[in-house]
Length: 392
Image 1 (cartoon, rainbow, N blue to C red):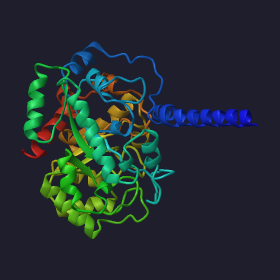
Image 2 (cartoon, rainbow, N blue to C red):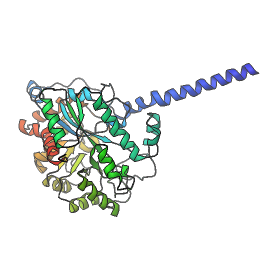
Image 3 (cartoon, helix red, strand yellow):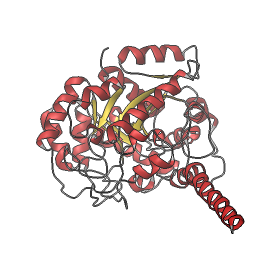
Image 4 (cartoon, one colour):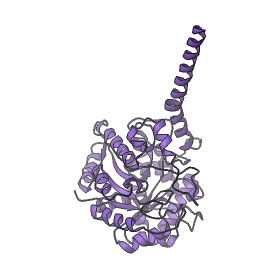
């Protein structure tokens, strides 16, 4: 009997260890691979003219969720959409890295409540620090410190910029070091504030400079484009917007309700961004806010980041994305249009960051001028951050 119990105990331990290995080491990469897929395709054929142009571009993108996943940003991976090696291969010199701290179960573009949170299980499975399991602020802090550690291990090839001087220095360094990539930290929603204005300076101290107000659910600041209330800003939201702007943050309205967008526009003349979106007049979907709101943001010196996935473009091929970019340039002005890939944001893309020359090729084939291609692929974004990051 003792022998039977002994072997039963060993068998039970083996089962527990096997489940643990699967949950902590096998499952997270599989989830990442499934949610951040690249559609299988033959290598894109890039015209010599497009490749020559792309090789001279300073590409910049307003939205990557790489920090959500258990990938070392410094290493190249065969899954997902971005890492520093692939960004360099694609010609990216400036990337906004966003912190996703909460997502509702059964996430959709119409109605989501705030009572569930799928990131908790992901945090546990990916072996994030225990203090992140129940704190959205701590998750944002963890993501920021991951990016800072990547910069420390990059041998000078990657830097997190916090102000205009940092960005100017990074751009100057790129003249001698073509591998240099600059990163800016942003949040996917302002719920890491956890309803406490005191967390605004704390996020700033961690290096955040872009703050999205909402994500897929209504939060303490106000209504989400995909929430239940369709409401505008709460009183706390108004206080937070004022404090964020006073502190020097750039506001991102990508997931905010139409009411929130209007109220923020009424509150401030500061340039704003919609970091990852489509254009409703070309792709009718509840994920895209009305053109009139985008036009007002553009008219005030803001940026409209065009996403790379079918839900916002209605055609996620390089040619389809190029068509949206050209349409946005026509109706909002080329100086307001940017890339807002939403790479690694649980989307399926038709090309990853290393293949961005395919987009340059599609823009050129679609008739956009080289000067306008240069603007939308990165110069608009670089100019915007040089003008709107804090001075120091």
